[in-house]
Image (cartoon, rainbow, N blue to C red):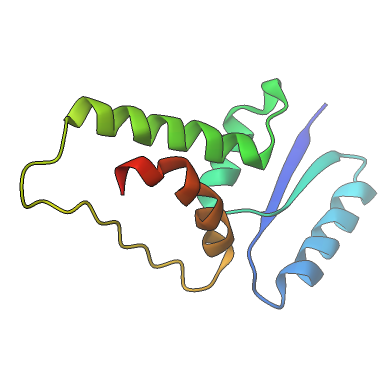
Length: 109
């Protein structure tokens, strides 16, 4: 049976558009999973791993683990180097996700 995966951003129109899509999908007799507000990469992760019933928080956990592993492979910082991460989430859904990501990578920033 076909299944549709929904995610939305923080725009004012998103809840209305999502409700219309869910109504249309339901009218066709198709099942859907509504993930709510998620980033595009999160939605890609959720769809790609749908057979494992992932949660949005799984993306944060897996991405932070991968980031930390990369930093360990890169080795210690050289003298005079200050690791900084600059992120522009434009106060959108990415902002909320990144706030959850930072404590998981704090050892490397």
